[in-house]
Image (cartoon, rainbow, N blue to C red; front, side, top):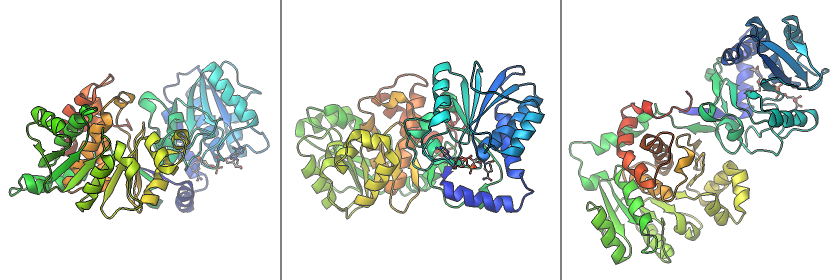
Length: 480
Ligand SMILES: NC(=O)C1=CN([C@@H]2O[C@H](COP(=O)(O)OP(=O)(O)OC[C@H]3O[C@@H](n4cnc5c(N)ncnc54)[C@H](O)[C@@H]3O)[C@@H](O)[C@H]2O)[C@@H](O)CC1
């Protein structure tokens, strides 16, 4: 599991670590790791380091010493010479760095204006530097975090640095993994920052955020043991009831069923309009049409006018339920059964009575608020899907690509999550595993290119097996 910690917890851990080390050792470790991460800058190139008043600037100044040693030229822009890390500046100047009044033609930039001590947003000189980066486009690497972002809240004030890559120390910060701030930390292969080990791990408490990785297949072990027990049969594996689609949106029913069949449930029951149910069974003969005993429900994908009645009936069954799409607007004030709500930003906005843009600007705040308000798991779909449950560490999903934003993709996700629920996963694991596998399957379906929701569903069984067996190496590990 990849983890991010809150700023206060990082500071406490750093103090505990530093107490057992020689003075300045932590900054030396950070600077060495930063310089190593910049080893692709060729000798003779010029790097402009934007230096702020705190230790973040100090890291960059000591890293400059290593870079100068390698023949890289280093120009320094100081936010305020009177507050700069004095020893770091002296060391950089002694090694050959020069202070320049303003940015110029440098093609490499190091953003060391602010780190975890920052208040969100940039003004004055720092804001002018952001304009320079936007206008001239140097390759920009942020030190620890892109300056100006909201480090714990992961929101993005209007003025902030947008980096091509970030090198962070000790542990991830929330803003490096969670959108929209994470979008400012790097792109492409550098979307997830490099993490420099400074020895902090033993001092860190429980994380603020966690993310499933390719190496976390053990999360499926318990479910697999249960499903593959010699005595298991279709009912013991779990029966998933799906109340989805309408003749108008028949595709949602097919895709939700496809997602469920790629999951682990022993059987899928479909409940819906007679003509639709006939078509679903025609296409997927393993599906049983009509009501019966189930271990979990999915209600809402492509649902028609009867979504409220279908949800009420599912809730009466007393088993865990995935509430999706049209059923989301009919959720009760509180739940008597374990539940996984799967809205996108627009649906969550409607549930909370706010604007869509408000949710998009602060997804972490709103998913947390919704999980607290309904007392259940809420999975907020997006480029970095979030899964929040009261009393659990919020998870962010790092698999997938923008191609996943395609019609029917959410229906597949709901079916997959439902099948995990029916197989015995709790809603937090079901939601986060489904998001992870769904994203991974989309990459395996067509790496680097467009995918259809059907193709994602078709890639799921192989993805589930590869993840469980620890062979997901052909899916990008977002740290590499
Ligand atoms: N604490 C430690 O032991 C270590 C810290 N490290 C580095 O130190 C950084 C944290 O250092 P600091 O606590 O000095 O914090 P910063 O380097 O983020 O600087 C904080 C200073 O900037 C000012 N400031 C913050 N936001 C501002 C804004 N928007 N406009 C104007 N001024 C603003 C604050 O008043 C404060 O004086 C980390 O991000 C990391 O880069 C690393 O060297 C590893 C070890």
